[in-house]
Length: 578
Image (cartoon, rainbow, N blue to C red):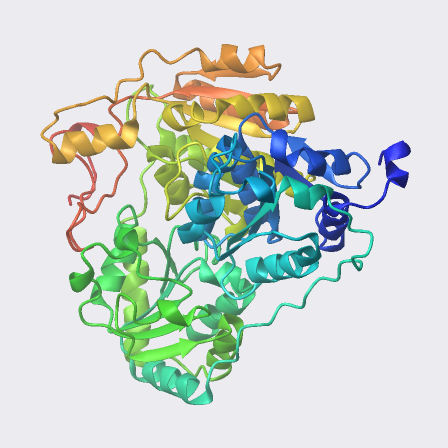
């Protein structure tokens, strides 16, 4: 904390705001200064807040996003007006679509200049209206106490999400000495589920012969991970998870069948398609999970448990709707669990058999590095509580398929928005949130370049983020789709002019090495994880490698491709055919 002469200056709106942030439990915030937010940055000098200077405002929003995902606490980012505010938009949208609690603070031109097209004036209130839970344009310093209290409460409450406070410069410098000290508002818990809904759910589970639990990101958002595990243990129901739900069950759990959906496991998708009851917990029937919706789980009744009542029956009509507290609902179901019926026992054994029969193979031939095997080994070598962040593309799906997570907050991935460039700043935010834990970034050569400037922030702060960069010299997921669904008409996917990423990291002062053969994988990963500070492992992989399995677009999840038929016999001679 700075004890300069400014500390005795009268308290203005900006100084009141820094004190309010501290009262809300904020320790770290991410931002980039500019003209209209300068009074706030002046107030930071005398505050106890730790401000992280990023090198692009998108990095600030995504770092706050990663901070919130890893910790469960509200992430805070700050930018000036105009381009500073507009550069936050992607990170805000990502948080909105993945239900991440954030408070975003933007500077704004002084209130007399609003609507005059003043320098760096932008209607950020209107610009962000569809991608925030709530937003405020603060016109009087007296409004700050209510705005800040509401902002943090709304960001946390119910289904979490981002909020935005647009703060004109004259409000920041206005006298705030008469304002009371900030008092955080209590967060209202989700309502308890109705007893009749619980009774209907219990009856549906008791009479089902082929039940499946389909759980998603709402499990972690509702702090219900342990409740889900207790329910699955007690009921012995085969369970599938969404991308955002990974880690809600340990990967080795006997009733876990894997991720469902477009790049899910065959065992998971087969179980869902054959089921006669889906117990849906904190999931929303996303198109990447369901495939062709009207052919998804065609024989199943649906029990849908979710804290957000608006998600229930939005895409698939629920036979039993259980809105409210997810943990409470799961505990009630667990208490009512009886002995599984013979039919349920037979179903569980069938699902377990599929899991074993269709387990991932790691014995690809040749000396090239096989990305799934590398990521499986990374997951085994890293500490069990390691946080793995990733970007978007083929590597994202390989991480989901082959890394093991013991909690959803240990897997940071851009789900609904699919934000390339997410990984590096998100890993940075996670490392600030969890300084004593190992944070690993798995990125691809396309995504990595989108926010590569944040290597400076990692180097400056000596953040011990470990970076695994999979380089196939192409936009791999786009290339795969062009190969499979656009008759191999490749268009604008060539990244063969990539820089030497190891040399690039070294320019930033980050130790880095490159590996290209599978014999180098064990030593490369061990050396990376042993580094006391930040480090990068540049991994060359085959540009022709695809992500399998794959459900083609607009088809049912039962239509799964396991491998390219033209290459299958050469790649995996003993592979089970699609």
